[in-house]
Structure formats: C-alpha cells, structure tokens
Image (cartoon, rainbow, N blue to C red; front, side, top):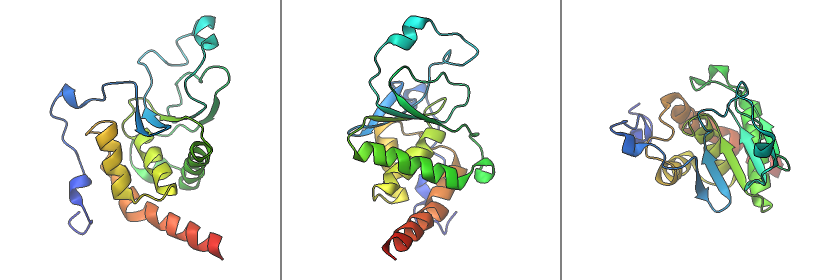
Length: 180
C-alpha cells in the first residue's frame, strides 16, 4: 500500500461505538444522502400497509442490500445487491451505470439516497462513484463521505483500493470517449 497516494485512507480503526453513524442516513452534499436500513427492514419481516402509505423524503433511491424492503410509493428506486467483500463479485459496469443514474437524478434536483445494510461500505462505494461522476477525485469523495457519514465509512479496504487505483481510470476513459 505504500505506493498508494494516501495510505491513510485505508482501514479506519473501529475504536468505539461513538464512531458509528448517528442517524439512519446522512447528507453528504445538499440533496445527496448515504445510509443504511433499519435492523428489521428485511423482506422476511412484513410491513404494515400504513408503512407503505407514508410519504417519503427521497425522490430517488439506490438500494444495495438485497433483503431490504422496497421504498414506499412514489419513490424511484434502483436495486442491485452485492456483497461487502472484494470487488470480484461486483459487476463494475453495472455499478458505474447506477452511480451515473444517481448523479443524473441528483443533478436534476432530485433528493437521492444511496443505501445498503449498515450504511458504510456498499453505499459508500456507490456514493463515492456518484461524487466522482460529479467531478471529485476518489480521495476527495472518500474524505467527504467520512466527514459527513462516519469516520469508519468505507472501512472495506478492497473498495477503497479499487476506488483509488482503478475507478478513476473509468472516469478518464468516459470523459475522453465522450469528447471524441
């Protein structure tokens, strides 16, 4: 890891419960939120009809935890579940496309939530990619997420490594191919 520009971005140490996110979701930049799901918010726990009828704060949601309930009525949602592990099980083309969708929704004034189970790693990965679509570097995105969500956000070193060493190349490629 010594050849990586800022190795301090790796492995934030979990020292105490005070480092956990304080809320279910956090605003990273105006209109762009990152978060998790309630512990019992899984498809095997039925929701009451009243829970589906409440108005939602979010216009657009990316859900990365397969067992989470769908959002309520009137919320546009993209779902793609994948593990909080290494990048080998992740369809990179798909997550880049989803991040671009989230960025496009956000750019159009929609209130966007990117959520996973705990609201730390998978949502952090997609939020970082969304920020990168908006012009941030991987390092800027990671630091912003940690300052707004929790200092232990993106504690999955495989995700951090991929963002720093490989993801930016996709954006350079995208920019150069769209300019042609």
